[in-house]
Image (cartoon, rainbow, N blue to C red; front, side, top):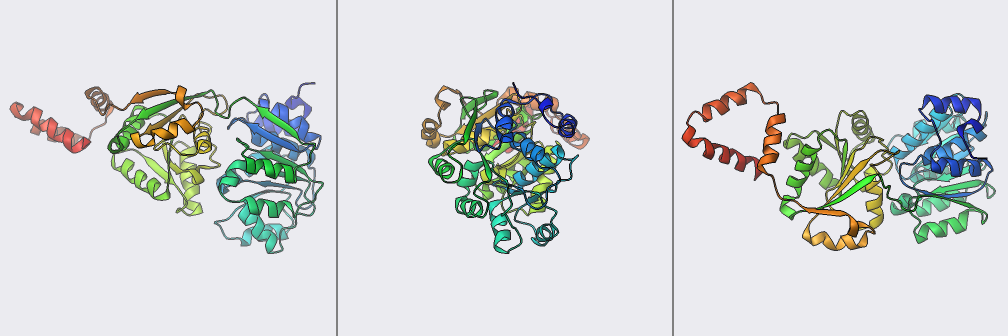
Length: 413
């Protein structure tokens, strides 16, 4: 019998209805019945296909008035810890289950207090902080029944593999383990062979980790024109919620400043920000108060904003898996998305490393055209002071071409 949400408990059905769930996604149809049987799972699916609910629903369904920590979900970033714990709390809001995010970058005292009071039944944590709490003797995983490794390949990329193995060894050997990953590099396969039961079930949805809902495009640029091309793209798509990916924290902060100088309301998220600053930026982005988010790869892991219309690679990444993760921020939950990569001559060799990019539409950036300027002028709201100055400047009609050319040079050079 095919799985449907009607197979679940009434209280969970009601919570899912409140959350806007109608029909299970393919990964949920495949994973939930297997997880409910207690089987170990290796799940591979396109980004944004609803895998949080695919492991979250079985966890909540199986836990009823639990005592102590019964489920542990390990995620690579604090943003993802907050996001996953929030979704699980919504699923289980009609049950008395303590679901809490545990992550670094904030005082550890409150987390220790929660654990000491026995309020945590489901922990969604980053490996570093979870290990720290184990070492302090305040987190006991000896009664854990379910462990989930979410975004396992990203966790590996961030260097958490030793922490993951340390934590898994602190849990009962008979636990149920579910591992979800967009890709399965050799290191992840080794992890599977060591820590999952040999009888594990594989759940794979889709032939590619890049959703077909993403319209990919390559834009060839000269190195000096990269910023101009980005500004043009953002102005042409000013109504789209956009993430611009850069390599380093310094790049993110610098690009935020440059875009703001050009009148584009952009905010950066990177590792130099405090946790409160990061949360403020993400809340503004989710609510649409900020349309452009400039992000490093590490900071962006775990970002789940359903309405991201466009992703721009300010530079093409060298690692194909990073490319997959980046463009997976758009085209989520059945929505259309755009992914544009700015590629300079020195980066063209990277195109051959990323499977499928040879077939992606390619264009050359032709600079700012008169038509671009006409469109921008037509849509612009100009203060009366500048309108008056323009009238005064253009009174001498013989000089008007020189005046416009002078202003264009100042604006575009």
